[in-house]
Length: 592
Image (cartoon, rainbow, N blue to C red; front, side, top):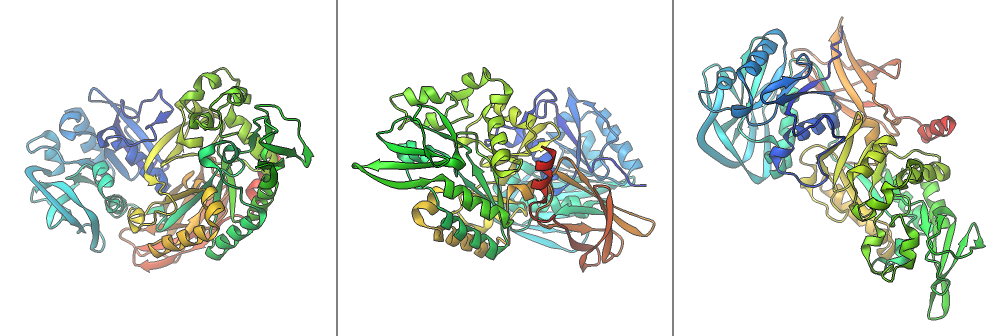
């Protein structure tokens, strides 16, 4: 029988992961003590592991204490937050279940220290070299920055698993059928300092497990994100003027992606706002001159706007050609559109058109932030920019977006809750909000440097990186700007370029690996995930057995045999097959 429990049981203070709130985290940087549990939760989600949560309320645990098939992770200060009752529960779980418990190091002489066999000392160590002595082969992570940790005092029956410059900072002790692992550092502080700490934590969970584990392989993976196609802000905002990319430009971008086997997320703005000023330019919609109405919103794919310069006219904003170029790129399986608001501009477009500062003040070009909150609060759901944008993308592209990119990186939690209700999987900013059931969880593990900021450090964690840019850079500097940036990323370790649709297709699935009756079985559960548009690599680890070259995969009610590239006795790699180009979009059109 397969163990159908979630892989990880996370024990967290109820103030960090409050039941009543639908948005966990802020999208900005939070101190480590305010997101320790959230960091563990999102790390598990990105790896493909399910998580159940038990909350601490005044040192009393609330929730299903039987959860967690492989790991129990306890967050918070163990010396002040773990009661004798909690320690008794842990001891019982370890006695009954071959499970791995992870906890920060307690103080010497505390009740928890008697269980862990490891406790803090008065000494700290700083260094760059992490070395693994736990299960499996020795590993070493050379960090780019200096890490700090407390050295551990170990009882004779406790094994040293990790050293920092030869001082023990992670230890493990056998307890009943399970293991309890002690960390001499705050895991979120370590993640902030160096991505290699995240890689170490994944390694610890996998190789510390006594059961088979499968997880997604995102080594060297970059999500490509281009903002602003379709929007009118490049016409109206004086500080942001530039011509739209033409059909031939998009063909060049498609060639770049094709050459690298990559995909691009195009954060598209489907509503084009008219200022109503015929003296500034001439507007055609669907090929016909349009009556100019200040604040009117037109479908971006139908717009051509001819600016007037010194009495002369020149075509510089061809949204029709842009739309055709994007459609050609999509048809070739090289990317898809995502939601960048409806107009990218303040939802009261009539007020914008009357304002004296309408071409100069950036706040007029923010659709979902605090400045728009009062207007949006009065709107019914069907006329909210998120719903209007989703419906427009379906109408013009026949696709349901996976990700919301908030215009100008400004939002309110109320706007994000609209995105949840609309079924979106991600919210993209500098960090990435990942959907977990009916809430968004801000993930600080996945960052979005600008596309011209290539550096190998972004890949140190082994998790995806988002490389974002605007259509402004290639419009002003040429498509070669993209070429040079992608070359730079490949030179520092990028080996795969994907889009948000592919990432959602992976992260919204869970992997559960088990071994029974001589067969290794990978169960892939789909939690509303879109189809895999590309094959998705994953890793497999099987402790205390020889990894077979095939495994049985079951997903969506179907089973098949999948080949595994066995690289060592107990470790290998596989690829979940992708769907034909456009299959997911066709299904959505038929449903609609």
